[in-house]
Length: 158
Image (tube, rainbow, N blue to C red):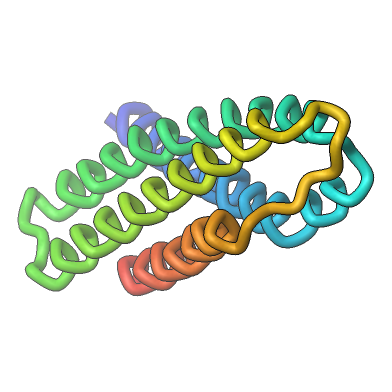
């Protein structure tokens, strides 16, 4: 019986750890890409190279979003299981708000990624890229909604 409980605890911690790592990689990657790397790289690389970088990063983002959805759903189930399926209304409201904010974050990232990719594809292959302001707005909205997701995650911890 003790071994079974220890194994369950290990699996729960592993899933929560994977969820945390996916969140750090995803949000950290978006922050780094939007605020640091891409503004610097844009000044030094042509559109063709930027498109390659963006496409590689996009695949990692998709993987992390799927990982977050999967592990997040499992974490909600773990919390429900550990409380005998009696979740408080407050927990459910915060969970729904977090999921909605995550959905907005994924939507804004998708719009940013799509518009940015199309902008790079339309640019001359060897030209320097100047990104229109309306495209950058979606990147910043992604960051803002990500901060809301993290704030709601902190509320769920208490």
